Length: 202
Ligand SMILES: [Zn+2]
Image (cartoon, rainbow, N blue to C red):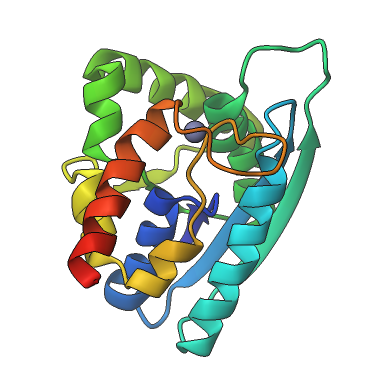
């Protein structure tokens, strides 16, 4: 069994990586952790990359590093405005990684909030498209390990160690100084929960 975990440095995929390595991974299983540096006009990629490296260091310090980490980079042409995220990451690039490392399983890391925000039909449509693209690239269907589609982000944030959570990046469109915008759908979901968790700790 060779498993691919797409890792963005955000809360959902960090939770899945942490939890999978701790509680799911079998002793004879190989895990490939992949981060795609998607350079586009949102200015998000530097923050994500920074978060990924901090999180990987944290995991190493805590002895959770029995995986191979792979980075790829894609520079989105400026005139191309449509976000490429799901098709590009889960579809095309995952297909290339699957082909390269003979991947058999892939971890999906969308929490229940995403299904509620976009609707199950839209989420299924995105998955089907990504899976079709992936199959064209790697020539096979990967088994999906769905870890958190029934779990709310709030629960993930409470379960993950606090210092690890603090390293995660979440804003879709940070400002020029790299601060969370406070306006995007992820900021609106995450900021009140972070405030709640921090208040409780104080
Ligand atoms: Zn934001």
